[in-house]
Length: 221
Picture 1 (cartoon, rainbow, N blue to C red):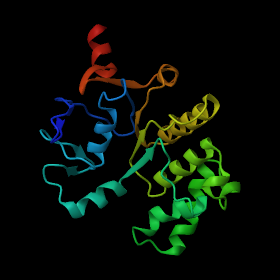
Picture 2 (tube, rainbow, N blue to C red):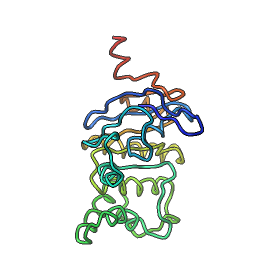
Picture 3 (cartoon, rainbow, N blue to C red):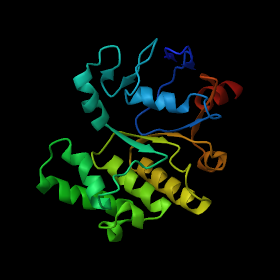
């Protein structure tokens, strides 16, 4: 897949890879290398200029606008800047992801409490974003991403705004989520986490894939 913009900027050049069910993949590379563009193509914020993206039965060359919301319900998306609603508590932020799908309150309440427990924030359920630390804010964002039981979690620099201790806590949580069967595609600048994780790594440079450990390390061996 390739992606260019009307300005002439080429964000992605002939990038091709497959993520298996339950796999953990790091996307690495300098700022502007194309990591976020890859994620945006996966959740259909952008459509490729050339090529196709296939995600859980959806294909961008056949994707209708009304189907984008259905696609995104199959995905969990976590951003560097959290994107929480400041006027809602942690539990209300998580519940909102279910409310927009038309879920009933009898379904929403137990699901929200389950994912808040999963990220270790049951005691902070009624706290507002202004009352939470950076690490706790990201845990709320992860809970919101998990509440629809996604088959893949997309994380765009999820530790980028956190200190080292909070970063490692969030990474351990994402690693546990993957261990429970959810595929993870995580864009990051944090090479310490990449080395510690030992997972498949895809490196981008100027919009092109220059290294894929699943391919290049097999060739080297």
